[in-house]
Length: 229
Image (cartoon, rainbow, N blue to C red; front, side):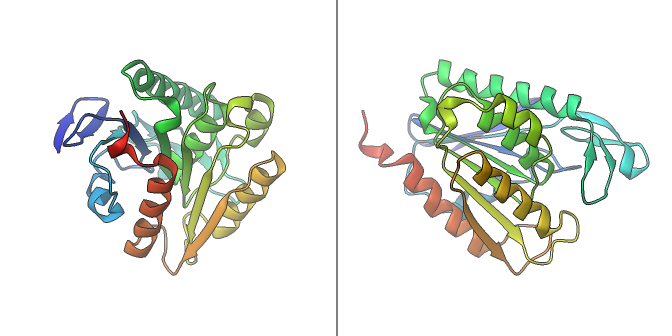
């Protein structure tokens, strides 16, 4: 495994030639390094999965007193409805769609690419994956919400009309309340998807049991990579 970093992302290359890719979006105020340590805990049986952890841009965040930090978009109000800067969110989504396309151009099929996002990164992941023009392997939404439901309903791609989705939330999350995760779950059903849903006795975070379950799901979505040509 080799690790590369530039101003835009952290790339973790597998020990063998990459045949699949997981792109993982961090939450507000973090960066691409935030979730790199989870890779071993996923216990993937494959030696050919590339991980990309993009860094969000630095911008002032209204709900944090205008303090500049890494964010995929500005959050204007922290009420249950989550008033956000949709223009910035859509711009971040376009950036991640381009990143997916770059992986496809490099030789990894779209249906071997999984997009994951935590919290704010999950809102971008929803928009990106559900509207991407080619069928992806799966979407992972962790402790997050759907901030662009109207845009997704208008722009949803036929290619991902049956996208496998894994949604997970903390029972005691006081940053993104579980009800927001449940609302996203309902919206996914409304557009014809059948997401898997799980909760864990934790706050706004991830836990070992959750990551091990996610690793099994990712392995199922990607198939037997090591025996593919």
